[in-house]
Image 1 (cartoon, helix red, strand yellow):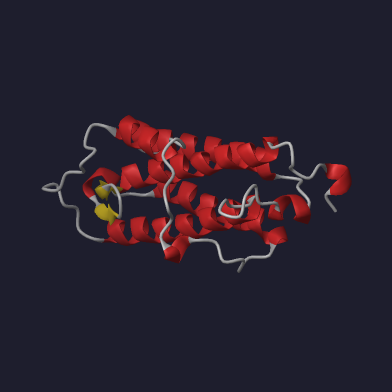
Image 2 (cartoon, rainbow, N blue to C red):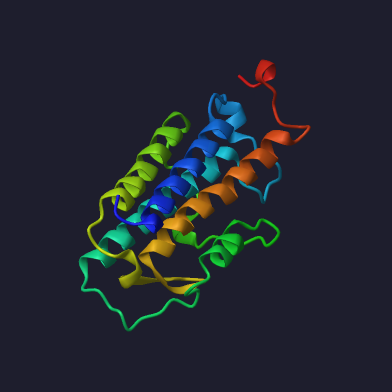
Length: 183
């Protein structure tokens, strides 16, 4: 590990992965499919969305890191990483996911957690092994603008945490199918 920033990224990515896995592990297919309302996502849909977004983001980070460094660029959140993370994780503002990353049911329920773990491990591995300074490489986020790759790594973790909270909200519902009736 090279810098304290990359150590922070690896730690945050690991922590948010572990928290999400604790929340979503051991659920039956009925529990994974339960939708709190017709316009709300099930736990399975949250997981599929996370896998899709994280795979796209890690590909973007990898591609950006292969480009020459650009010290002339600045993120709109330059010096404000924690503010970016707060905005990203805040569930008081609902956001509509772009169609390309909306869940479609393409992944079987029994593969979702493994797919999430694999995606997150790719991100952790990149953060732990990159030889490049991620602060000098950028690509655009549709809502936040041109972010540096370090911010993208943190954003992936915050996004996962946002949906972990959403999963916990689904689990806490009174009408959520409990284990005995969930098969």
